[in-house]
Image (cartoon, rainbow, N blue to C red; front, side, top):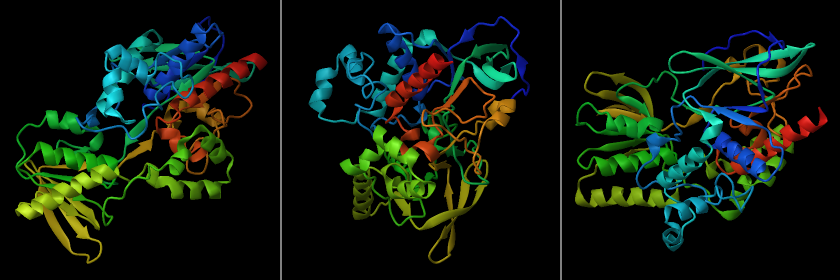
Length: 438
């Protein structure tokens, strides 16, 4: 994010004031926009909302919309159903509108194709497009003061031509998303990619690969990338590189999945920090560095079949780490180290894909002077109230909410779709309750 333009503004202008301005328009703030729309339609005095999005149109992980990749959560955990099962913004309503409802029912699955779910999100975004301005890069939040209190926030945005606009808000909801994470010292290039951009990079290949690919990582995205490259480039080797002995299966069992329920957020939020850490450790395999068992079985089927035929293209480098990477004009040389023996070998490939996860975006550069009024922990993470409002000192009377990057306070579902609908209702309830008492 661009560093903030640090200063406070006295509230002397006649600038219009929005009840809510959302920064970012991924699934979280899309769910919030729908909830606002539905409350107004029901006759309630819901807050007015405006959302600013840096992209030119709605898009959600399009670089990983692989043809056969499916969702890892039930379609019932869409943008609305847990909050309002009667909503016409549901995934089932989308299927009905597309004329595929009965076909989907006959499919007997809870897990639609990821590409189809993306189409659903786009369909929803188009229906609330009057609340969104695309192509707006938010660069700063400026506190607006009155009698020594921060009563509003000016949201400063720039369009693609560099023109600056300012929107004033009583409440701001930040949904900055996640940023691709690469190992220290590794930087993306024409030959070194993060899995987030896989399909875009493959579409722009300047020449046909001849040495094959290496995929670093052991989670769901890594396994999906390995499977996709192995199928798409049928004559080339694909090397899977990870420190584990093998891919670990994700835990999708019913009791474990309750960690994603709204009630689990309450339990996690109220738990002491030591137990928060234990819960995260216990249930990491529901989401992190774990792979769908069916995909593991499919990769092993290919792995074994190639050995039967004596033509092993799928190469598994387990218990292995990358210790050096050298990129030239026509290849990448990876130095791999066996973590048991310490032996090092050099692997030559055309491209390396790092499926090494994501990190929350640091919101502090965006906050500027406002950050001095906010509470952060020793790790630089914002302290949050249960309603997702960032904890501030008592000089701040406006609301600053955060969607995403709240795993340390609200649990493992914070970065997933599971609680998007419920969280939207909680944030609106908070804004309305605070408005009623002000």
